[in-house]
Image (cartoon, rainbow, N blue to C red; front, side, top):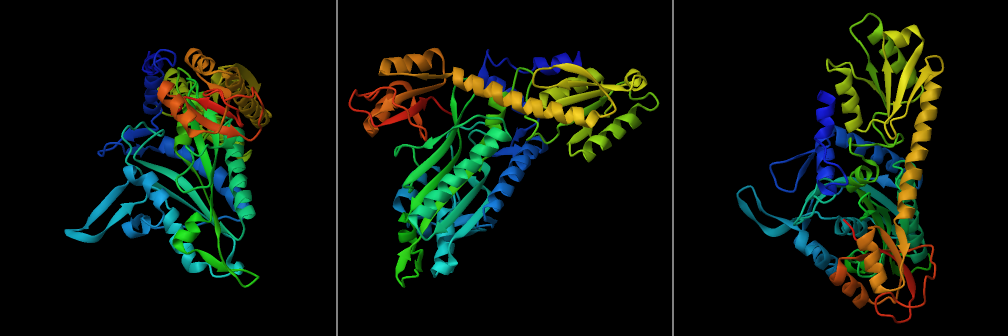
Length: 478
């Protein structure tokens, strides 16, 4: 009964998707509420997923020459005011420090909502000539944005992320770096998290405040809503001119640098939950899972069972597989359900009868397929299963994305398509912000991105009927 009760506490996805999401986050022990509204406690199970994402990204960043650093938590108001468009974009979400101890501060300090101005201030001091370029820095930290409505991982007032900030001698180098980092995000999302994405450029309405171009990777959740998973921004030389970040060129001229910024946050964990989870809880792709295999000893009090379980763990660990043995005093049924809720990709059952037959039972989390494997060569079989699961999970998510992506040639067709079957709709756009505003006001639909691979669905704008210039992915989003 214990395992049945554990699963019954998770609302069905089809019944109430929002409640299902909250139930999964809670039952999988990913987060907890804190004493400050909108700020979450990331529990070990949730943080372990973030650590795996960090590991995959960090190694890729460093392979391109990026180095990690740490910037201050607080930003003086006078420094923040130097780039007007940037300030205006973040002003409604800024938290301010006005006292130090019992003394009122002479100048307000902003709790960083992002760190562009801090990096600009730093670069203005260390960049003097072309020999100092490029500068390729990144930091892993938390930021604060005073959101009105919050939900664990998806939108919280404080969240974890990385923010890369680079400066270059030329516009071409900055654009190349901007696109390079977007490709890295897409690689990790698709190949590690098994989340298919659409890569593209944001419209001017949706781009980052202060950027000349923002690129994004957009994913489709199980309820048909889009989620912006990561962004990469080309700042041009706007910030450089505002903060006097300039260098002496080889031609002996003073030139402004060209900057980029790129980031991904813990909302990626929310995407992972909503793309792969089911009515029993999390389903984590093997390559990103903190624990890839849970070994459940059956009749573990019987002689030799626990010893065999730990011997199998040792064998799998040597093969590079992340394993834990659940030797708690709970029933096997409870352990099975607990492993499912937590999304551990593969369950390995071993009991007295299995030992006699020199075998183990393997159960896949994604489709619950059960098979019997010989103990000899077990690590090879486990590796094959994990690889197959990774591939299958991506293919299922990609199939869902394709099935939920439609084309539209008129406004009524676009809205009807999303209302009937939520997802991405590809439609043409004239490039006018008024059409974006009208569509959002009319139906809550926003432009998700202008995809890199362009197609001509029709020759007129889906909103106003005038000549179209771009094909855009549209949808409702988190």
